[in-house]
Length: 306
Image (cartoon, rainbow, N blue to C red):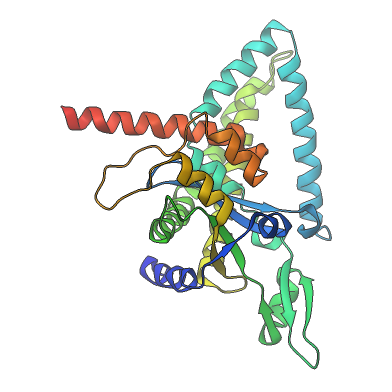
């Protein structure tokens, strides 16, 4: 589907936007949170409760086991006092800090087949059920899918900016992350000689495998986002979160047409946003986004000055 068509679809859903309160937001088990980093760029986060994962899928269960094991291993490495391990962790963290933050935003969108669909089955009595993607597709004619709500602060950012950001995010995600996934997979065999050396961990191989996984997750997230924007199975709907909007309005000047792009977030405001939205798990990722965007805007200002 062309980007212009996608924009029209998203704009159509944005007309149905309505104000929501924090209690409604917290009770919503499937949602997208928009955190404005600059006046033109947002961190989109797909937040869901665990009971909406398709636990009947072997792939989902296997991925959860592997990610838990990797997380435990990494936590042990970070707490290790071994000189070599400390250096390896430092090098890896430096590399990870250079990864564009938009990748993490896309990766928060699970593959569409991983998430159960909230649907209203239309019959003699309308009932709400949770269906897998395959089940929803099988009975698509009699299914009305509940939309996924995008919560945002209208006081500082417009829906048109959100539209543009979502289109750009999915377009870049599909193009960039599939390409990088292929690069990582092609480079992996080159690390085999290192794995054959006794007592020497194949750190490059582990890193490439991890980056391949991250790019696959981001690509899958872009595909899921595209499906929602097209409204195929579970459409998007925008909602101005009132308390969130008031918090931003009290601390940030809203974007105005024609002004230069500028930062909206800072270290003083971030903790209050995390508390308000209950998304403390994003602290590190949003701090990375703030740092990278501040550097980008500074470089742009320097180029203009020259």
